[in-house]
Length: 307
Image (cartoon, rainbow, N blue to C red; front, top):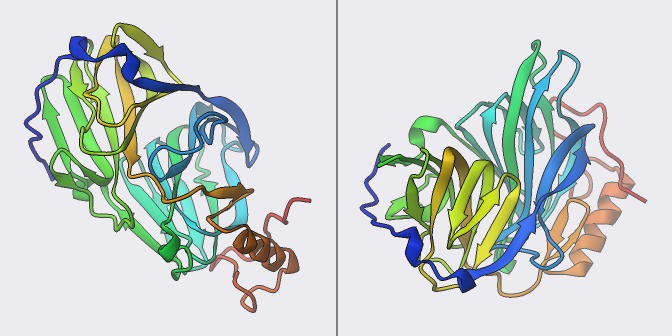
């Protein structure tokens, strides 16, 4: 599905004061695999509804290597998985059993409670590069029934223009709407830029950020490299340009939540009491009796509640 955003841009007009926060991603371990985490950050907990942002790879994996995340729980959020290289096998307690490949989107909404596992496809040496984000839910959706959506590459809006190639992963931007059902106003774009190509950020969202996945970009005369996230002031006109080797970036943001979100382990909520309830239910391990069950087809092991 293609669309023409019909925008013009001049990165030289961006006000340097528009940059509100610069985040440098930090190394973390998930399932025995190192990732780069940009959100949450001490000075910036969220960008719009995005409360968590992990880059996985790039990595070259041997047969016995990869991400092997056993069943674990979530509440109060939606997880977005998007890959550039490699493949994951997703299973969750809604009954979803889905392999995700590059250019596709997995959107799992935890609501009141869900558990899932994510395991690399083990089929010999392979590359891995992808991003997983968490999206906080509005308060009136935090207790909804868990759900899962998978959207193939062909269903995602795309455009190409003057060295810019973009795919809309979630939400709305530049007049297009992605197919995944969302619960707050947001945008999430995969953008690839040829050397020195330029484009603007959407100007009709409250919070807006850019994450540099590969290459580097220039904003208001400053250069930003791989693993850095820039968050900008609401309302300012912001454009950026790729460096001499081009760049792959992710644009994200949307409306801010109506209050803070508490995060403990894999739980996100506007209520500390709901997090305590989720901790108790997962600790008790009474699958199918409390709020949690285990993924269909992956019930032999799970990650216990941290002490």
